[in-house]
Image (tube, rainbow over all chains, first blue to last red; front, side):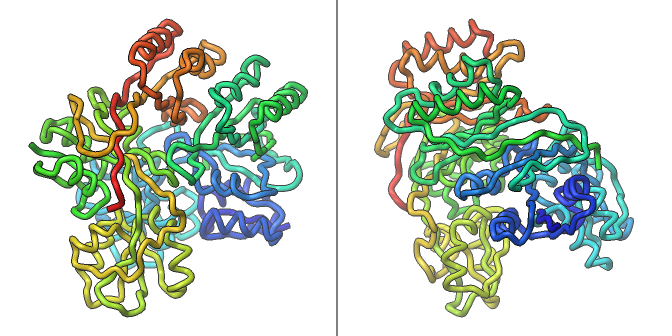
Length: 276
Length: 276
């Protein structure tokens, strides 16, 4: 069985893939869009992509692609704690530190205290940063990347857990056609919906939320995303607790009666991973 | 009078600054955070930063900084249409095309049709990309950047308006202590609020929205942003039509009665600019 994931080897998504599919043939892709396309083209049975980080918020490349395309649905969610390591080939003072912008933002405070002269350079992902540093062993380079990337590219961790905020988690979605059981602790069941509100329904968002509120169905997230037509037109992502399938069924029919279009982006169990 | 803006010269924000403050001393800064800090430190009288794009969504660096800090408030909003140009020193086939990730996303379709062999390189802003290309006149480089950047750095536009989606606008906020009148067409008045919902109030978001809905006050935007504590805790940005100051006053007192904390991020008129 083939599984597409956001690579390269050593990335946070790779770590999720190893936990969820320890026996499968894991295939890395360079961008989220390429992972999702590989799944749509049936090159793989499942795809794994990040969907939200507790500090940075939603991963728009994932959310927008799922909203725009048909037949893509999350069948499991895995929550992974994110820890960032400073790694290098040598122990000399790093002149350039490579990483993804989100990891740079998280490590900036540590670096400015300990390596004030180092310059930041942006890469497409943390794992690419680690690979780039490994490919230039003669240069005074370092990377901010996960532990797994240090192992993969033979780098030495020169400072451990440098992220500024302790509580840093990322949600990853497994896309597939059938529920995927994962051997990890299961914490809840959720449904994620994308709502498109009709122009001619005043207070439409309020009415959409009423459908869930009066039934006592909890929303765990709401976010507007631009419809990419004109400024001020949005679709809404809502995550809904899915403990009562019956109540959800009625709520969804009522949305339809109100003229509110929705798309189910995922219907899944939520699992947690321990620190990589 | 000094005005801080997101530079360098030739950026979209610079263009807004020139329209809003044609007589002032405009001071560029490299990042949004530096612009906002310069204003907080009273180095300048006003600050101008982007807050939302119609395709990419909110500018989190702006929203999160305003939420975290005291005494920062938008006093005017300017909406600018965004058009991207491909520019270079020479007319030879560009081997590398530099730009900000959002502009690259917007120009990718045009470039892959017309320059399939060109490689993309990421820069911190579109105007930096233009400057970098101008600094290497002997290299086969091009940049995706605004018209003003071509003029500023003496580059030739080799393809005009290459953005994929026609309707592309960015909202910019002017931060200050008093209302800033701008000589541009005025289209509406709005208030932007950041809400923090109490844990012990079931359906708190729904109740917060009720306060506006039953008074017939329109919301033009709602977005959740992570509180950066644990995954699944959010604050909410809402933009509210501010045509009736009296109704808004009652709505805000009712939020307080419900135990819902709010912060006013801006209280402003909205102006539109024509294409740069």
